[in-house]
Length: 84
Image (cartoon, rainbow, N blue to C red):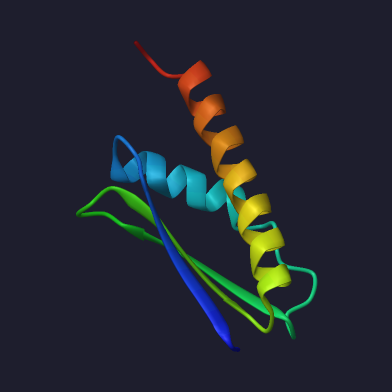
């Protein structure tokens, strides 16, 4: 794979980062020959880490945009149901 990108998205807690990972992880990439996405949680930093490896920039851009939309949706959902 020619192009790589790693994103680190902070969450208030490692537990929330893991909830986000588990919510997003089932959304597999349709073309594994063009793109590989790996998700992990860094518990010490309370971050969701996403690593993308793609054959071309367009595939990388589309996948990252979709991933970020999912992160926003999960974050808003967690905020809506958070205990205040």
